[in-house]
Length: 185
Image (cartoon, helix red, strand yellow):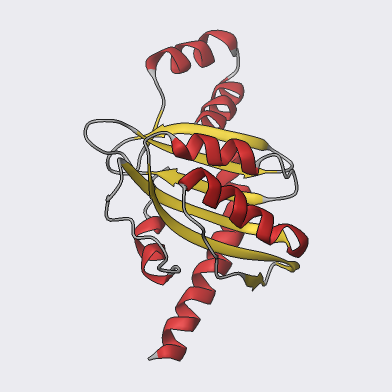
């Protein structure tokens, strides 16, 4: 899995924070589905962790009209994505993705969450590739007898079930962003 969509999505997000690496780390938080009563709580939580007040530009999500979506590009200390993901998963009805960019020789991080699947985490290389280490691969091969099981476990290790669950939300999100660009031209 490669995080190619992030570059395209970065041009259409609210501009409260830039992702040009002012802090020790930077990345993108995309909340694909959140109920209206918790929107301010989400903003307060993220703002407290980043150390600045934030106000997200929430929009109704086409796939789930009773929920809202938003995106934020952030700068902060290295590892803050982990803290944000931990806090957001406490609201089990959210669907979100947090990407922390690889910087200065360190791996990036990817967190994906859906209520049905729980949390997915992976290190991400400088080109957006999800990284699986040798020990993970050896364990998957050793513990699974059939080829089907090995494939299923490898797909899980790269986050395919989360990718599949979030992809319709990403597509809808990107379509809305493209529409707003066309309308503003």
